[in-house]
Length: 257
Length: 271
Ligand SMILES: Nc1ncnc2c1ncn2[C@@H]1O[C@H](COP(=O)(O)OP(=O)(O)OP(=O)(O)O)[C@@H](O)[C@H]1O
Ligand SMILES: [Mg+2]
Image (cartoon, rainbow over all chains, first blue to last red; front, side, top):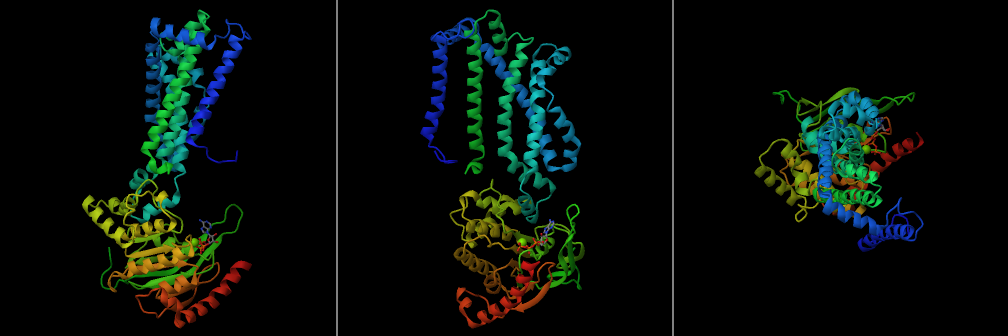
């Protein structure tokens, strides 16, 4: 191993799968080997069986659909509000001076701590679930986008000016395209966090969703179902992440050269 | 806007001064002493000087990217107050837009000015051919060598049909051979216009050979705070090719400039 030396695509894939295999192997060892009681931790086989019954008997697909829609809905609303504001803050320093202190404060407010308040304001319906995700994502996106846009190479801006660009052209045809790949990377990161907010939102006062299913399973002490639910969240996260990455590579081929 | 009968044609710099305020308690930096300079239309002027003498500062003020502390610049009678497409610039650092292809980079200024797409294509095409970029139109900047990037930057500046070209050590980061090729290319592109429609050029460099080879006049700047301390006409006829670099006239001019610049470089090093 040499520092910073790249690894081939096959080796990368094999290594990545290797750790999954190791993880599941250890899990199987501690459960099937009798090192922990089945009451506390189901074995991989039990989790799979529980998963099967979730899909066939408990309409788990409906729960998954519900959760995915909440995450994407909340995340999209947050992104639509936050990206334009972040770009304006990055590009125009007075705008940044106006919003930055408040947003830096607001971004440390834990979204989950607002759940009781949000239930009071918005009930336990979808509006409340979406609000949790929006609240948890919006300030993070604003700050990241503002930093990215603010770091636009000044020599590119100057070059554009000498080519005849005006204010609007600088924003639309220099700052935004220059920032776009990193903005998308930031969104990918925040989408990951949005998944953690949605589950928390669903643990309290929800009638559907993966988080709700996990809560229900706890009442029945069904660790197999709980673990299967958690694993499904991880898998969906992994898949959306890969799709997001692929989309970014397609959209911004110039950035990955 | 362009002046009536009495307007001065070409570039006119009067009493141009630039002081940078010091950071915190540091004393302010006088980067440019009051400088006067006149450049006639179609002239190719090299500005030679030691590092830190204010060459970039001078060029940036002419470009409108920096404001003078005192004095001013007029181009064809118009006061320079901000950057504009009448003054094309090529920077020492690579400043192609990485998200645009070579052809799109060259068309950037034309699109900003709202030219119809057909015209943008035709003009870009012309400068792609002139700067030897055929076959690279659809490359991204990151796929190009330094020399190719600077060719594109030159084509991008020229496509706007500026009244003056401001070149700030455009070949400074290139290896020696590529740099010589680029000098010839620049003279070729510049000389492809008729003598009375040639672009006015201000070319900043600290390479004496380059300064003499390109220009019809070389200005030597003093160590910081910069001022024009000597002016050396280059009476070598255009078109020039690399063989002039071996001529005795070239050697004489070079020796003279070397003497001028050595003194300044020593001062700059001791400062
Ligand atoms: N924005 C700035 N703020 C403060 N000082 C500056 C600024 N820009 C330039 N200077 C100072 O002004 C002086 C002249 O700088 P300038 O960049 O014009 O030199 P130069 O002749 O182009 O040098 P080089 O050959 O190294 O490019 C330097 O001492 C530099 O430190
Ligand atoms: Mg410089």
